[in-house]
Length: 316
Image (tube, rainbow, N blue to C red; front, side, top):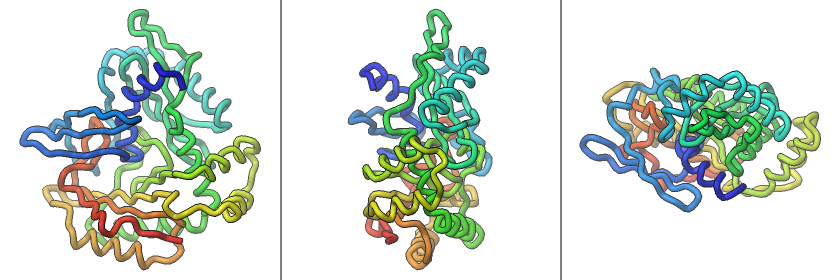
């Protein structure tokens, strides 16, 4: 990735990690605003989170999601939406051998982030960046690119889900049961579609930290007809540590004006620990109050619960 692209990636992708991966965030609550420090690519930047942007997570559909200095490029992108969508679909088809549908265009300085969802399997969410020349109002559809490792991580998630199909079904059943048995909810599907990147669902998201999954991606890029059995066989032969797969269960309190409940948190942790048949990985549980920042797509606040003493929960 070129240096100027890395700089643009920092400006464009800063909140993508908050929405889909929630990596590198540290929140400090003030009286009027919450200041969120985002560490990315070895840098830190403060983002002011106005309380007026906080909405109930059940009502949040991804509308209002924004990136810094994106007002002008937002308008240019919408005026050129059709050609942007064509270019981004071509980018994913050629580079990642994957058909996608476009869910959201989010303007930022010098470009637009285009949020997509893959069609069929491997299933994942991701985004690509289309540069925009604001002075000439030109959309550079021949220069579409993506943040280094971002789509690769998402693709790994989709392939992991195919390889561990039975276990992922168990995980989906588990989180749905948790939402029925406890006063908690997840994000809406619309919010996931419009703001997330990676293998992400309303209740959890995955991240990968080993070269084994780079090799898995290569297997798929070489042969899109590779079977689930072949993917599983490859992962069985190339053992990865549970710590290499981060499975973050991301929940919100169901009722408004209720603080994240430690007793509920502890009970859900016990359920994770005792449930058999979950995918191999390191599990983390996040529990927020009912509010999500509509501009940044993040529920993380100073009252969010993430007990480091019990995280991570290893599943072999």
